[in-house]
Amino acid sequence: MSSKFIPTFAGHKHSEASKKAIGDSCRGKPIPEERKLYGVRNGMYNKKHKDETKKLIGQNCMGEKNGFYNKKHTAETIQRMREVRTQWFIDHPEKKAEIVSSLKNGKAEKHARYGISPRSRKQTEFYDYKGLCVDGTWEVAYLEFLDSNGIVWEKNKQRIYLEDERGKFTTCPDYLVNGELVDVTGWIGPRKKRIIAALERSPIKVKLLTKDILISLGVDLSNRNIKRIAREYTLYIHKKV
Image 1 (tube, helix red, strand yellow):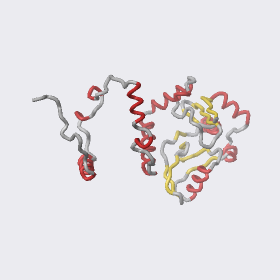
Image 2 (image 1 turned 30 degrees about the vertical axis):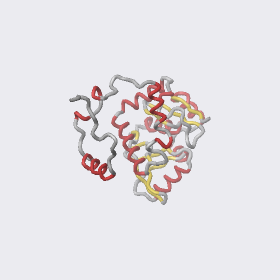
Image 3 (image 1 turned 90 degrees about the horizontal axis):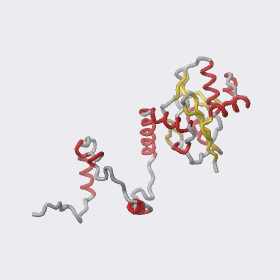
Image 4 (image 1 turned 135 degrees about the horizontal axis):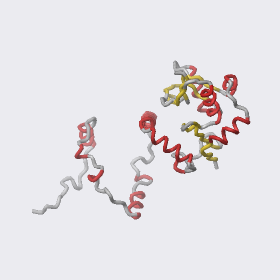
């Protein structure tokens, strides 16, 4: 008797009802440790695909051969993906520190958004303020103002849910200042206008700090101070081509 394994299901396919029954029987159950294919249990452990193999894999996943061809994620799926990713960075603060460190060392190409053109601005500027990656000179000026006046603040990590006639969406205000959500508002584009309109109808309170409000608070937004901030804190500038 041959010891060679002969697959008994070769040449057959599961029916849709069978696939559903298999899925229902497995859904919600933890995967046994012995069935997890990582480390030495993985057939590709300590191995690498040849360049020819990689090319074939790529060709078999392109166009109509791709399982996601001509499909789109639903808004709910996109939101779940966003929440999982956001939570991952909250749970792994060392990764954030690694990104900031790479930018400080002039290794901007390692940043996740390096080379990606901004949607609405001619350039994207990032600034390092006490280890925090800040995306505007006004924000840096505001944080300097808070620190110089002994005002307690922290970076906000919680997204808020809003809704308007176009549907549900989320946004993440910049900071928590004395327990109050605050968003430093520079250029007001279509998305920011949508957020402002939705906030007016929402029970969630977010303090929007425009240029006039920042100046009235005593934040120094003079050209001289903004140029100083750009010199002292810039990590890198990505210009839109």
